[in-house]
View 1 (tube, rainbow, N blue to C red):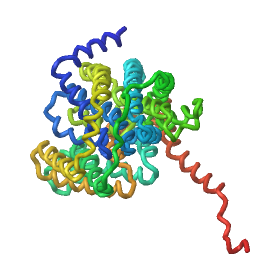
View 2 (cartoon, rainbow, N blue to C red):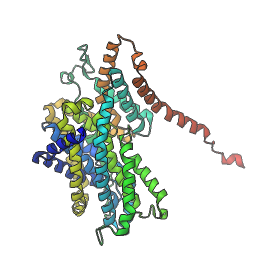
View 3 (tube, helix red, strand yellow):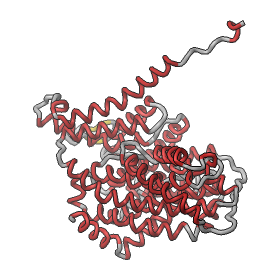
View 4 (cartoon, helix red, strand yellow):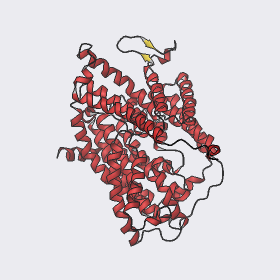
Length: 506
């Protein structure tokens, strides 16, 4: 009952004309960003952090949530019509969605994607409404030792799972931890890693790092890799409505995709890629027409798109209740909380109920707005694909630079921005994940603070982290996440037979 009362208060906050305007703006920008290939929600939120610096926090996060949901919706449009996923969660959708477009059924593919996204997003938001407060009650049992262990788990999971290589993930994490050390140590008053530059005494702004890595670095990488060729966009033909058979083949995948997307999205580094691939495999196994998969099966669009949108709500559950980012976009939203001097976690529900419940309520509203935006206006979104790419990328770079400067009107911020942006570009070229760097920058100082606090309480005894059952369990899980993949790779390497030399055969 308390949850429903809190949610009704959230709707009262979200439905004010001012916040409703930001919700509408967020879902509109998010949909447009999702449509444009190579520009995802993480880049967009990072780009808007400086612009929203003076905005009231509740309105800003309502807009950010709308961008996140909108990008999940919009990614299906370019996947289906152009075979170029706008964000990673739409990769699976492109397989059969584009095949349907080539057969002249692009409108039906877009319809099942939009309706499935609406159903999954709404059901997942209901789950978020009831799961997040339960996670908060669990988090209230945490002391300094448990919080330190939880942050170690967050750092480990994002590092181990986001990216193809553990060593590259660790390199990104340690770079972020080093950036987090810059400035004055609050306990000793000593300057750390400032190199005699007074402007660095307050530390490196998380917004500057986020914009540098995601906006500057990502844009330079996408621009350097893009082939400026004419791309074929498949026009929408015939009826734009789903047939009775399309409905009968779609509704079960929508529900199954939701059941897969929300819990996996809530897992550390679960993301949207894993549930979408799982949904595709499940639907292929359960389908009466498995031979159609890869050739235009509507179930292969309905299920993964539902899983994609449900995972977005799942990602917000640990972020709001524990301060635990489980995706790149969640890491940027964590940076946004830092920008406003807020720390997501159990205290946030007590100190800022308007923000938390207004944001959750806005997800219900945003889902409805997105359905209105995506079904009748798909022709307008497709026209965004004809924007010349050089104009688009140049605009992002200029906007990011101006936004970073307006934070403190400081030239040093611009120098740091472009240094980190170039490093971010190098990280993308070398396939080094950038999310661990942002998470390390944000959670590193907090983990250090909890570590020192736990040692102060235990009078310097480091066994405090191992004598508390919950802390020990979290540290063991973190260690297993690092050790198990290494052991599996070593075991596979031993099992693989050595290639036989053809010269020895003769």
